[in-house]
Length: 182
Image 1 (cartoon, rainbow, N blue to C red):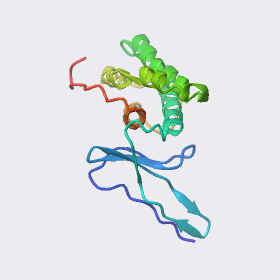
Image 2 (tube, rainbow, N blue to C red):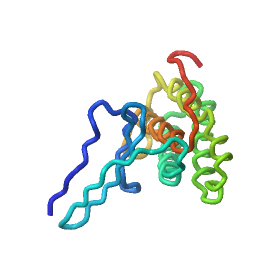
Image 3 (tube, one colour):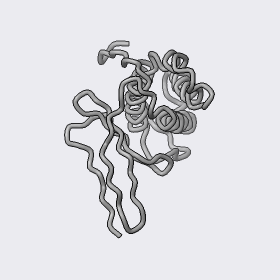
Image 4 (cartoon, helix red, strand yellow):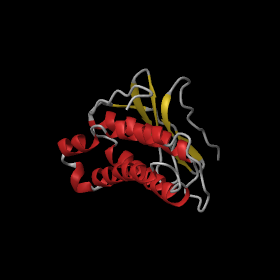
């Protein structure tokens, strides 16, 4: 069989590709978030159109929360194994762990029904993620164990992209962050 691959439109941002644990891709174009479900089957390929994710629609919460939990866990493990010698390590690790704890909380099925609690937990989390990323600037790696496929900064970019789509899905406006200011 053949396999058609959907190409994310040129000029898109916050691209989240599918992975072994998660099928489907996310991207943002012209201020709107989209989800594209890969539905390839053996011998035949079923092409579906990307669907726009409605602001506050809570349609992708479980998938995005699961992705965020996996990514934040990888980030914390990577920090622990390979970056503990850097300045401000303890503070940065605590903040990264807050991201993980929030992802675990909202990924727990019983919490997903309480939309207000999910929104409150996610509010300001993007600002925290941006702060973690800014603190990692200039950090050096002391390799002890490979965690996941990506480097530290790529992991943070994926976390920020996931958060962008998650905030949109649950109806929380991103915190405006000015580069260089905390």
